[in-house]
Each structure stands twice: as structure tokens, then as C-alpha cells.
Image (cartoon, rainbow, N blue to C red):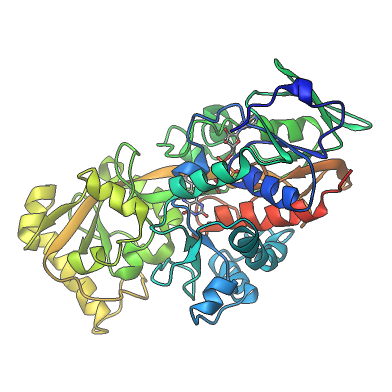
Length: 452
Ligand SMILES: Cc1cc2nc3c(=O)[nH]c(=O)nc-3n(C[C@H](O)[C@H](O)[C@H](O)COP(=O)(O)OP(=O)(O)OC[C@H]3O[C@@H](n4cnc5c(N)ncnc54)[C@H](O)[C@@H]3O)c2cc1C
């Protein structure tokens, strides 16, 4: 990474300054640089894993060339229909269609123009998605994908990394960014500093139901970049929306990933009883898991499901960390976990009957995929707040909208600093929405930026 000496940069010699080198900021930097713009990329916490590095690294790109090449029929419209069905009345229609249409181009740019080792993952399933459409590196890993972006955007002509926090002022000619190393002026500024999940005061104000809950996102999410937009009179949207994680291992260091329920797994509480249709998605599950005794639930699955999780970096980490119990019998598993064996056996037997179509699920779950069979697996999980979804209201090109209804000249927002794809609590977050917005809206921002 080049830590620029600002002496090399003169007034207004960056076409665009970007605050934050996470998923959104680095994507915009690469896409803008590819158009020939001169980029100054500000990142004061480069040594702390950001949300991109912590994430599963999985993003939907419905209709991508990679997905088509694998013979999967899909389209931006199909993803959009899934999003609207999953989050009825909660979709950010300002950006949703633009993001859907941009994602194939965004992934194409990463793969073809930048040489990213991104693949379509045909086996990756998630609640709410009618087709298999996730992309990542193999095995899927936010840390590995982040590392590739970091390497690709460092030492590249046209992208100057600035490893300092900037004092930013806005004037008629654009933006001035002051750091201990010097000053940079740019006519355009992209706010890409993530959300506010690590800011307890803002979480308590906007998402009171998750005040004091485990935050398994990055400590870098302090809301400082979003605050700049607020200071300049920007509107916000969906501030109570968040990406929850109902598959987080207690302590928050590891998690099981989003796919186990879709593959047939169930959740039981300390009494060994199911309490929710597990197919509502990992985000919506979080408050339901937190509502159980001790704020925890036991995720129960089997070896056949585990065999399908080889490319899930998150699950493999949890396995390595010793978070998964295994036993040839349900009685043995119940004993290891400390839950009632009779209730657990009953819950698994009933789920099996639902899977075979012998009965309807009283909790309303529609798909069970398969009846669980020995050897059995289980892992304790809790609910966490992963990533806030509310943020600065933008147009479909990322331009930030002022209270007056006009856009703020030269100001763009993307990723966690901008309003996400869907809001209202945890329920609206369709798996993959975070990176979909970071890359899809990021693509639109990069195309809208003007070259000096
Ligand atoms: C546990 C977990 C799992 C997830 N899994 C997935 C997944 O599989 N798929 C998916 O689509 N999404 C996932 N997400 C969400 C995804 O990580 C985010 O949507 C994405 O990282 C948002 O990108 P961003 O650039 O806004 O934020 P980040 O990637 O966090 O980057 C923001 C950057 O801004 C920097 N910054 C902060 N303040 C300042 C400042 N004042 N000045 C300059 N820079 C600043 C930070 O240091 C950071 O590097 C997950 C999130 C978590 C927490």
C-alpha cells in the first residue's frame, strides 16, 4: 500500500476523494480508476478488519456472465422480484432497480478488467433467493476477497491511499480534506465509511431493540462518515434497518453462515423446542434467537448438510474453532448440548415429517429440504447486529439528497454510509444485500463521477 505524502498531491489534483477503503470505497476506487479518474482513498483504520474483511464475502450478481456460463437462468429482474417479495413495502426503490441492473457489469469489471479471482458458487443457497446466484472467491471468504481488493487498489497509478483520518470541509469548489500529512482538494467526495453498528449511542437511538446486543461487525463502524452527510443537511432513510445474524456463535467471533436452514437444519431453544420457521433468513432470525432463554438457540443439522458447506468460509471457521458438536444419536447430542433429549427428538422427528410432506409445520415453515439423519451435528448460536442498513438517502447514482430535495453538489454515498436496499428492523435484509449495494451502487457512483 502506498501511504501518500501529500506533498506529491496539489490542490484539486484528485478528481474524487473517497472516505473509507472497505467494500464500497475500494470498489468505487477501482471502477473510477478504470475510467481514468485520479482517486484519493482515505482509510485511517487500515489495520483493523472492516466489515468487508469480516463478511462472508458472498454477493448476488443475478444475470452475471459467470452465472450464465454455469447454465443458471437468472436475471436482474428475478433478483429484484425476490427482494420485493422478501421485504414487501421495505425496499429502497430509489436504488433497487439500478443496483440490480448494475451487478452483472460490476462483477464483469472485477473479473475481466481487474482479474479478480471471483467465481460463481453453484451450490450456495440462501433463504429468499429463488435461484443460486452467489459469487465470491473460493472458498467463500470476506477476508480473502478483501485482501484481493486491498492488493488490487494499492500501488496502482491513479489511486493514492491516505492512511489518515481527514478533517473535511465543503466549499463552493468542492471538498478540502486536511490530515496531519497535508491537504487534498477534490471536486467530488464519496462517503464510503460504513455504518454505525459500533456506535452504541446511535444504535440505541435508531435501533433501540438491539441496544446493548452483541455487535459482530467491525469496530470501525462508528458512523463518523455518515455524520458528515448529516452535518451537510442530507436526508436519511431506513435508519432502523439492520443486518442481523441469528447464526452467530456466542461471543461473536465465529458464525455458521446462512445456508443451514435452507439445507434442512432447525433451531431449538434450551427446552429442545422449535420456536420459529427457520427459513425467514439469517437476519430476521436474530431477534427471535435473542428472545429465547439465555438469548441462545441450538442449531441442529447433520453430517450430510455439513458435507455441503465445504466452500462456506464462515462455517469452516466455526468448525475449526470447535463450535460444532457431533454425535451418532440425538440422545447423545442432547446430552452434549444440555437440552431435553425427548423434546429434541420430537422436534427433529416432526421436522422430518414436514420434510416428507406428511404434515404442515405449525410454525409456518414451507421448505425443510430433507429429514435429518445420523450422524447429527449441533452448535449454539445467538443473535447479533452485524451491519446497519440505514443511511444517507441517495439517488440511483449514489448522489446524496439534501432535505430540500436537491442533490448536494459533488457528494455521493455508498455502502453502509448510504441507505441500504431494504429497511425496517432485521426482517428486510435479504442475504447478500450488503455487498450487492456496495458493488452495484458503487458501479453507478463510479460511472457518474466526472473526470477533471
Ligand atoms: C459478520 C458479517 C457478515 C457479513 N456477510 C456478508 C455477506 O456474506 N454478504 C454480503 O453481501 N454482506 C455481508 N456483510 C455486510 C458487508 O460486510 C457490508 O455490507 C459491506 O462491508 C459494506 O461496505 P462498506 O464499504 O460500507 O463498509 P466496510 O467494508 O466496513 O468499509 C468501511 C471502511 O470505512 C472506514 N472508515 C470508517 N470511518 C472512517 C472515516 N472517518 N474516514 C475514512 N474511513 C473511515 C473503515 O475503517 C472501513 O475500512 C456482512 C457483515 C458482517 C458484519
